[in-house]
Amino acid sequence: MAERVDEVPASALAIYAHPDDPEVSCGGTLARWASAGSSVHVVVCTQGDKGSSDPSVRPSELADRRAKEMAAAAEVLGLAGHHALGHPDGEIENTVELRSELVALLRRIRPEAVVCPDPTAVFFGPSYFNHHDHRVVGWAALDAVSPAAAQPHYFPEAGQAHAVGTVFLSGTLEPDVWVDISETVERKAQALLCHESQIDETAEWLRTVVRERAEEAGRQAGVACAEGFRLFRPAR
Ligand SMILES: [Zn+2]
Image (cartoon, rainbow, N blue to C red; front, top):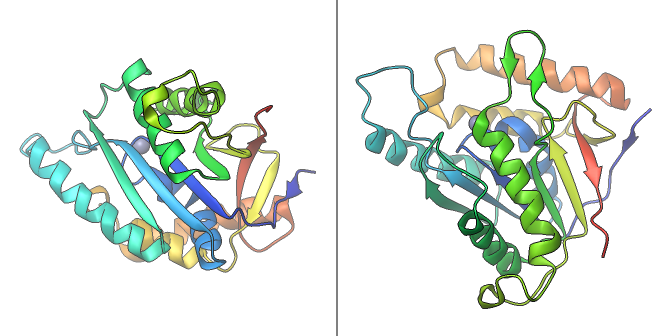
């Protein structure tokens, strides 16, 4: 059985593609850490400007709306900061530019833990395969953590080298640790509800789905509600 991780990192940076990804992937964990005194930051790499199936929506207006939703969600989760890199939705690539931006942020915030998508997770059942941006950002985050941020000769203009202690990979097919989010599952749902542009269903429906998924993970973790991750400790 996978273990439970109860200790709280002093600081954390969650690196994701779209404005609502952190809440979906690890909102309960970020809220738990923040309420325990951890300094938790989030960086979102795209503007989320293609996140609508309505052809009449203007991408630039959607991006503005989603930036406000992200700020509201950050408040609910109790984040110390939220950052946006502003790349176009669906067109992000794991380039030197993206890695240099992530390295600069890692060296400025100097998080003990990083949370990001598991880029090796592709097929989730018969009807969903992982979004291009999630896979790209997962690889870019890992590449930025190690070796780039930790080694002084990578992007020397981006600040003093910083070694991240632990990486929590979310959206993984191989969870090996659990974080107990029994106390913060409601806050996760509340933060998700801030992303109004992404929600067609009722608040009650969304709260139920969030709780049911957390309870399913909780059963495996031996707690009421949990989020699962694949834990990785980059070699120093
Ligand atoms: Zn996404």
